[in-house]
Length: 57
Image 1: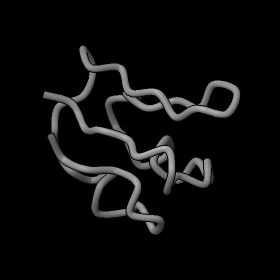
Image 2 (image 1 turned 180 degrees about the horizontal axis):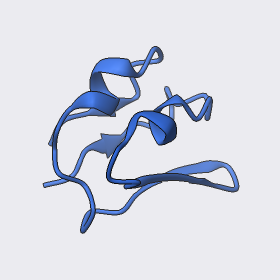
Image 3 (image 1 turned 45 degrees about the horizontal axis):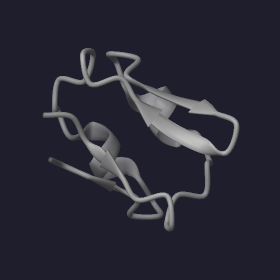
């Protein structure tokens, strides 16, 4: 399963999009989207999210 995004906490800083080696995260408009087919559940984005908006599924 892919990570989940809590958009009430996400500030769209984009840090997770840079840390993700699988390029599974992208910002589109005012949303952070997760490509579940690409996400490898490594947890790097969760560990590096300063806002606490990402949760391992």
